[in-house]
Length: 377
Image (cartoon, rainbow, N blue to C red; front, top):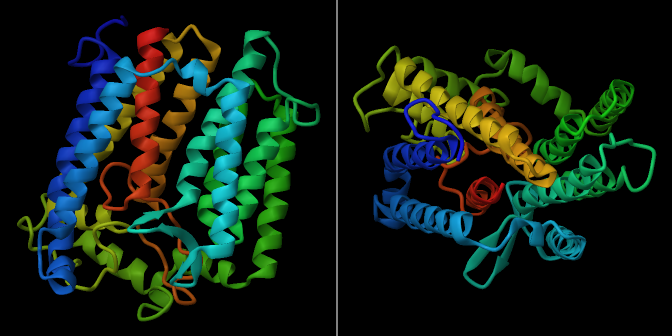
C-alpha cells in the first residue's frame, strides 16, 4: 500500500472519499439546478434528483465492488477482449448514423426500448483501454511508440476512426476529446517530440479544413471571444452563463435562489451545472470544487506513478486525463454559444456532477479500473 496522502492513509482512499464528496455536491447542485424544469415538465421537482441518486448509488457501488474484487484488468486489456470492445463500440457508433435519434440538429443517441445510450461516451473509455493495452505492451519491451510503424500506430488509427464517426454526428468537441486522449497517452508512453510536432501540425490543418467546410464553427470561436456582440442569439448561452457565474460573488446567492435555472440557462442541470453551482456557492465554492478535482488528479497521478505494471500505468493515466481533463474543459467552456440551433453543441459534461445517463459510464468504470490496478500492482 502506498504512503500517506494528504489527510488519507493512501491515494486509493483519497480517490474513494473525493468521489463521495463530489457525489454529495452533485446531489445538492442537481436538485437546485433541476427542480424548476422538473416541476414544469414532470410535475415532480425531485424527478432529476431521484435519477441522479439512482445512478450515483449504482455507479459508486459497482465502482467499489469491481474495483476491489472484480476480474483482473489484464483480462480486459488482452488482445481478444480489446478487439471485442473496440468492434462493439464501433458498431454502436455506426448504428447511431443509421438509426440514431436526432436532437437539436445532432444525431448522437440510440434508444433501446426505455433505455438511451450515447456511444460517443463509450468511445472515450474504449480508446483508453485500447491505448493502455497496445502502448503498455510497448513499454514492457522498453520501446517508444512511433506513428509510422505498425503496430505502434494501431491505437492512434483506431482512435481516429472513432473520432471521424463522432465528427459526422456532428460533434466536433467530443471527436477532439477522443483523439486528444490517444495523443495524450502516446505522449506519456514516450512519443518523440518530432512526431508530436507532426501531429500538432496535422491537427491544425484538420481544424482549418473543418472550419472551411462549416463556417459556423468559426462563428462559435468568434462568439466565444466576444459573446456580447450578439447577446440575444449566437452569444445567448455564453452571456447567461457568465451572468450566472458572476452574480454569485464571493459566497454565492442563497442556495436554491439562483436565477439561471429559471429558464435563462438551457439544461441547467447538465451542460450548465457548473454555472449554477458558481451562482449559488460563489467564488469560494468554485475554488473548493476545483481543489477537489485537482486533488483527485494528484491522487490518480500518485497511483499511476506507483504502479509497477506498464499497462496499469497507462490505464490509470488515461482515466486521469479523461476525468480531470474533462472537468477542466467543462469549467472553462461552461459558456457555450447557441449557434445554428445548437448544432454540434460541445458534449463536455462535468464528471460526477451532471444528470446525464451515459456520461456516468466513463468516470465510474474508469475509477473502478484505477482501484483495481492499485490493488493488484
